[in-house]
Length: 271
Image (cartoon, helix red, strand yellow):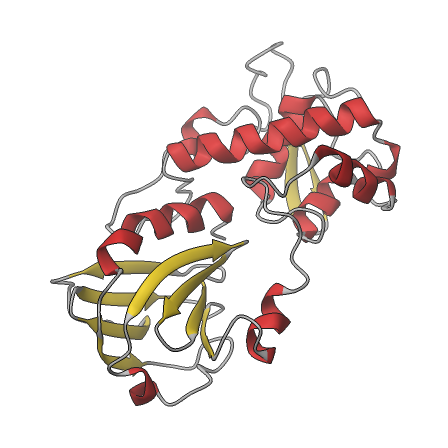
């Protein structure tokens, strides 16, 4: 599933190119996770002003309203003047004066939703419960610690939930917990202020490095201009079960948490 780094890399790969473009036409394929929320031809003639991100949502600001785009489990965006002919898994296509934006999503868990504004019910339903943005100034250590103290489930599950902090997906939660020296099964409520601060810094470090590396390409992720990510190559624990820890040489262990695989070093992450 594309997480915050992959979504941010996608945004960076086409945001400048599409800004200022006028919509010529919109085509919808098979139904996605949620309906568009308006007739496709209602978007014709509108201008793209900017592309932002909130959590794992891309917000495409128009001169009237906005589009909220989610990549789901397997979605990816392409943008260009000369894309290949649309295929059976291309379910949204917006032709503009600067190129065509297309959503390819084999599993159709992604979505493109129109809202009149970010305060509209459709937008608030998707965005209002999202946690702090980890790569912004809103991600404060003290607030992070207070929120963790309120939760008695494992710290890994808290990170994945997205209610305290958004975008720390499975890969990046495992990596951040390793960097902070915290066992993924530890109850979030047991983290001291200093350990919360270490985890806070680790989350920012891991996500920033992942964005710089173009995200992680485990199966088929690529940016809107077709570039694959490379962060997975330097992962310390993720998907390295039974391989030696890069720090202490102890074999990396794996366990299941909430139906997701977690990877950790039993020596570097003792508690």
